[in-house]
Length: 456
Ligand SMILES: *Cc1c(COP(=O)(O)O)cnc(C)c1O
Image 1 (cartoon, rainbow, N blue to C red):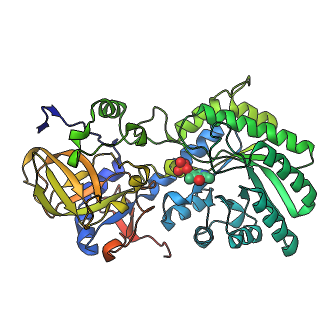
Image 2: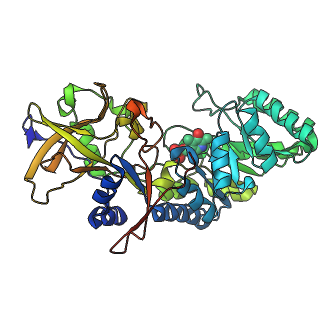
Image 3: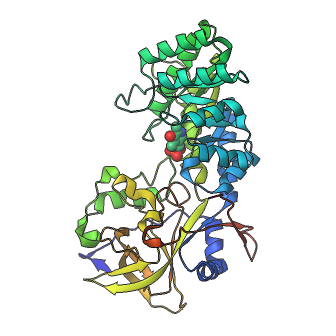
């Protein structure tokens, strides 16, 4: 149906066989009945494939590297288990995340501890378990040295996190002067510290600034070695983009979307949207990054790393979770408005976390009608939550559904495993947190399911 005469722009997700098999299997209505509320389903094979592709990109470029899964992107135990099984580590930033990672099979030395001004309890555990810590401030370095000296069991393994030159207002990382001081303190600390190298994490998804900063950290390694420090590795953090939709749909959406396309005439700033299409995504983006020539260097980043004998660490979150899960709501009510419907689902917008960024999760949700004979056509609808807040909308955008949505239908938000699922979930209104269901064997006529083993 046309709104203001032109059809609404659509953002269909890229095809994914496993997700489509789950949708076609009839499992979702059964689970919705069993749980009586929204739930997430997780697809372990997708995580394994993403990890394998990234490790393959490193090998193809002849780069020695190690992948840490950035755990904050999803709380499920499943992905930690798959990381451990796939020869990856885990990036943790709290005692609870560290405990989860250890409890689900990741060895201490395969963790990396990141985040600002870390809890001393976390630093203690990192030293005990031989996990490297990305040091974010000088006082944190002092605490670590003290812990290592008093514990006298193991040295503190450290990376020094650099403040990105291109993002001077970031609250993370050490300035140039602080780095120099930190290096001196590492030298003084002697055996209490293993200064293994440097790290950064950039916001945004551009490759060139990452290649440039990585090259700068390689140079810092070479300088630190002159001071007698190990400086054998750099971590380039996360920020590998993923593509949710195709280039055409995304560009059409960006040029055509306007406030009349949203419930209540809501406006979003285009710049606040995640880039739902990237020409290079996931492992391809990593390969391109390794092939990028850093500014003022003659060779690719891969060559630079090889020549300097520097191990490349990366901490992808979102990119490892591409196509690794989706979120299912039941339509609890349908209301007619001026030319569109408002669907109310049995959960809240907090089970989709994009609101954190003054924006919303844009890929089109998929309607699974309860009645296979429901009318076909184009039915614009926005999606609201089962709460008493005017602003609690899962989708302000009017989605053009191909079937008429009805109470009892399911609404599947695809590809939500990376950050959308559970970053912001809360038991607001005493609503239960949506359970996570792991779906195995999606290629068989009857997929098997089990609950995720997350402890809390
Ligand atoms: C959040 C974060 C990551 C993961 O970022 P993605 O964009 O999900 O890949 C990696 N490292 C650090 C230090 C982070 O804070």
